[in-house]
Image (cartoon, rainbow, N blue to C red):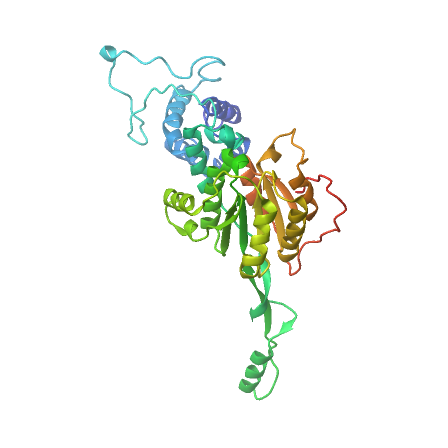
Length: 398
């Protein structure tokens, strides 16, 4: 590198950043700007100061340390070099010497660690590819990887305003009890006006998942999604699955091990991969479970592809009852991820006028979008505005 007083400092820094990016390191223009700003506070003439400053700002992954050390040694080994040590298209590292011709390995003078000659290339990110791959097309190994990514998702649901209050805040509600107690200490003089603010609590979540035969390609991963969702939220989560009839699985999801929870669910459910009667399942939920779990402004997630063998009038009536009883009704359809999908089945036509949000749930990216959607719910005391149903026109709501 040139001396600190030369005019080639910025040019050399840009070449150095280009070298690191060619090795696959995450070096963006913002990091290089931070490095230029930091060089105002270190002595550039001392290579150790410059080395540690650049490494702390440009290396974000542990496995990139050796790449950075090797690139640093190659680029800065000739103090008067005016250009990059190798041209575009050339290999950044020399070919390794055969074992019988190897000499002592060079070491980094700042960290006393050997400098290895690494041939490193980064072709793709596995997570980025799996994010957009449909659950029904995953192999066994890919499904296992997706389950691990799914367990890392952060879930948060909107809060509801309760009827209780707590001390503090700048609200409009006066705390009369505390006001009178303060006056006793000051001889009846009102020197303070304590106030109180409403309390907020997380909304309960209800999950109704379709496990019929048409949902079989998605069932196992969606049960993993339900398990991760129940484990990631602090509020009460009530889960049900249905095919020809409704089954309550909340207790099974409380297991600390996923495989054990899935095994308990498989023993509990007797109509696995059977027919679909969404209306009958919703009627059972409304009459047997609705008053127990739908209080306190619950949010309902209904996961189904909409294929229904039951009476569409029954489905229309029962989903309307459910819609009026909950704070928000979200229908998650794995088929909605296809650009050619149209909700033409009788079940979807009957249900669409009573749905607040109609969203896909076919890959990891759709689950990430769902997490963002749930976290963005506005805190308010009333349910969202619901226009009068005017038909079953397909509107994909966001």
